[in-house]
Length: 98
Length: 98
Image (tube, rainbow over all chains, first blue to last red; front, side, top):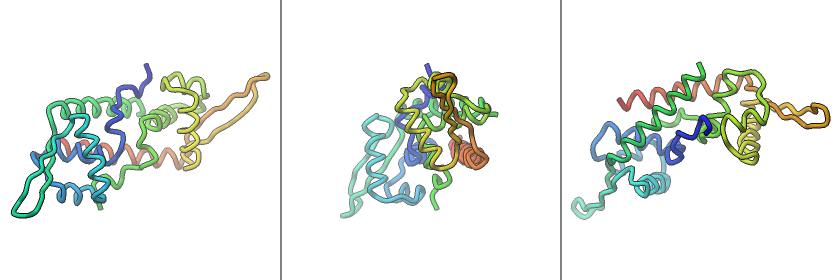
């Protein structure tokens, strides 16, 4: 077993790290807020959030506000647990550097 | 500017995080040792180490030991600085989670 095996591949990309970090300390966050916080394109956010949804790490809610569609995100319990595990593996790897 | 912009894309993959972590606390490490520590395939190590070499984050030395070719890796000053910066950006992102 290698020293990186406990790092979760689903969280490798910095966009996904960013999405999860934001959702860990917020309840529902909508598409526009998320895009602004991360400073990424619509397509980039759509593709990474859909990957995280597929792994059941986040929930996606679609609704209409007036005539405008609105997409929001929230972390799931499974996502919270997986992300905490990933962070503690990262911390261990970093500590072994010092 | 988004909260993930300071994360270095060259270090996104967990294999590269692993390579850098190992080289931060060692001098030259050879191919076989590295492969064993990370528990990855030859091709995987070759492709990620070559990407890190291209960014001048690591040096690659090829020599013969008897009749056997031997490849070794060492971090560069540039790589050490970039990795430290990446780690401190990661730490900041994590702290904002808690």
